Image 1 (cartoon, rainbow, N blue to C red):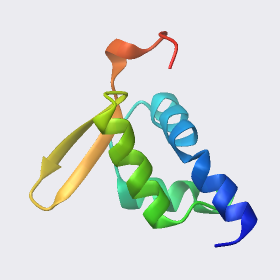
Image 2 (tube, helix red, strand yellow):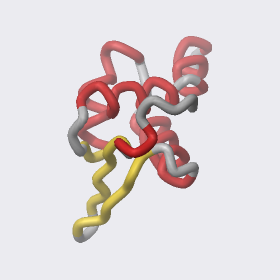
Image 3 (cartoon, helix red, strand yellow):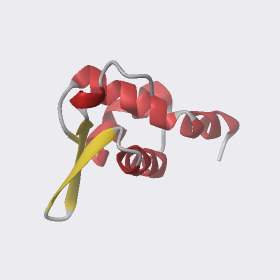
Image 4 (cartoon, rainbow, N blue to C red):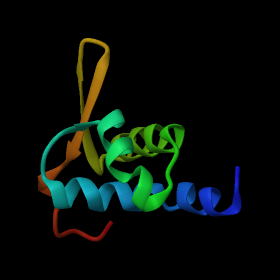
Length: 82
């Protein structure tokens, strides 16, 4: 992994949380990856890992529909320090 990509992966949770809050709609991991790939240089594995981490921490919500997971910002937490 290149140094730039490693740095981007380390900051992925913050980037993804901000993105989901700004967009205020549900996304699959593939959608998030596709939308942020060029701008932030995040790999798909980093996106999936960060989304799962944020969901475990309760910062975002996760819903499973069949085999696909959908992620969205937990609006009850908006305005609180992360």
